[in-house]
Length: 218
Image (cartoon, rainbow, N blue to C red):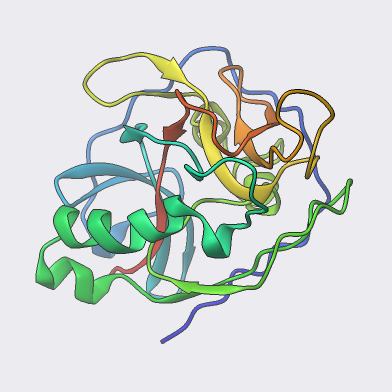
């Protein structure tokens, strides 16, 4: 069953999150999960961003790994063709969750809008079980009107290491090329260590990954 994500709110690049990382509350059974709760899946902590009927949108509580958005320089890239999408829906999905858990993860129609201000192309929509949040979804689920637990969760630590890092979004960055030593450098959006959003080269190293997914919870 496909569950579309269709957030079209305007971009808001600032937030009221505290400049400190939140800590997960005690884990909640899936069937009683509410927005802001923490549940476990694949032996990992996930924060609940939204609950719709028997489905919940989850974001990994911690930064799970460090990877570039795409590992090939000088090519035009969108979420559809990124190495990170391939990794999350392949190796990560297969090795993180057992067969029963994978059956509960919903294949989702992921809407890849253009950048809301700069109109950088977002590419084609995709069908994914695991994805990254977009600019629009950050505003909808973790923006200034969100519960404090979700606003604070914009700032995230690397799992088991405790380092606060930037983390990728799937939305395109503000440029498709620059003048200089990397004339074909492509960009993607990310959340900075203060919780604000900004544009980075898609091949940037040292940026964290926080997967998101929709899960059947009863």
